[in-house]
Each structure stands twice: as C-alpha cells, then as structure tokens.
Image 1 (spheres, one colour):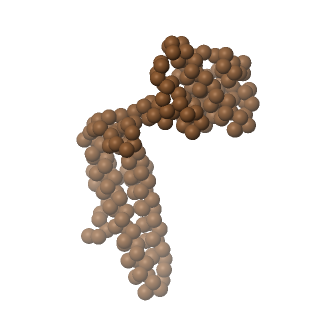
Image 2 (cartoon, one colour):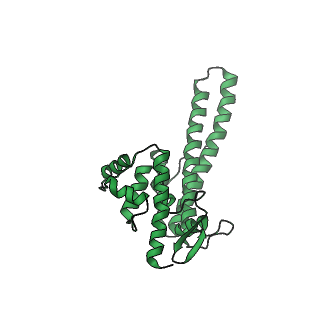
Image 3 (cartoon, helix red, strand yellow):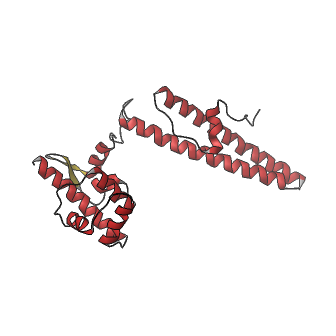
Length: 216
C-alpha cells in the first residue's frame, strides 16, 4: 500500500462515519456544511458530498475536528470507529484491529497490562483516576451536607441524635475522599503532571489544607 493509498483509506473511513453519524442525526449534507461553517471552517455542500462519495483523497486535521464537533462525536471516533469497522490501516501496509489502532492512537497499551511508568497511557490513567476522585469527593461532600441539614431541621430529640450520628459518618467519608484527592494531586505533581482545576467546592484542597477532620 502506497502512502497515497493509505491516505485514501483513512479518508474513506472518516467519510463513511461522517455519513453514518449525519444520517443518524437526520441532518442533510447542507445542514452539516452550514454547521461546520458556523464553527469557523467554511465548508461547501459539494465539498462534503465529494467526501462522502469518495471523491476526496485528503482531509486536514481542522476539517476532521470541526466535522466531529458538528456531529457531536469525538474526532477519534471518526478515524477509528470501534464496533463499526473491524479493521483499519493506521500506517501504510499495516491493517490491524480497529480497537488496537485506537489504543495506539491514544497512547494506550493493552488493558490487561499495567502501563509503564511515564508512558502516555500512564498519563491518561492518572487523569482518569483524578476525574473519578473529583466526582467522588464532590458527591460525598454534597451527601454529607444534605445529611447534616436533615439532622439539623429535625426537632425530635431521639431522631435528631440518630440523624446526627448518620451525618457524622457521611462527613467522615467525605473527609477521607478529600484526603484521597489531595494525595492523588500531590502524586501527580511529583510525576511532573499538572492536575486539572478543581471545582469551587473543592478549591480548598489546593489552598494548603483540607477541612477539619470531623472525627476529631
């Protein structure tokens, strides 16, 4: 397979996915072209039609990204449509399983193996873990707040005490989630990674201290 044939092959995959997603969204070619133009990349209906019927032999990165945005799909899903195309040729002469091609493109290694330290997949895993930790800390803090409020507004002495104990348990869990997130961010920085910005409710984690341990 020559380099030019390889380009045509990849463009054909993208073209097929563009057509599939466009039809799934009941968009006309003109509507998709207009959406791309509205996003800042002028695209004529004829250009899009030539892409979909295989008359275009090239597609630049900007066009790929804006088509994905207009179709509300990740750009990588247009290049490596897992579940739709069994195999693709990510490099000249190399036809591989689409999932393997996608994993290569995103810098991941086989999921059955631990990622090597400093590898692209190790970075991805760190940020995925961070996203889950932020969600956990935010969720547990919200639940703890609601449980404490429920205890506060209850006027029955016995029920008030019981609800207070339950609230304290949730507050302890929220505190532990906060500590876990703080430690994770510290480990990321030790590896030379800059963690994402925190939501306002967790900003105190980067201010040098966590909130007081409710168990003390």
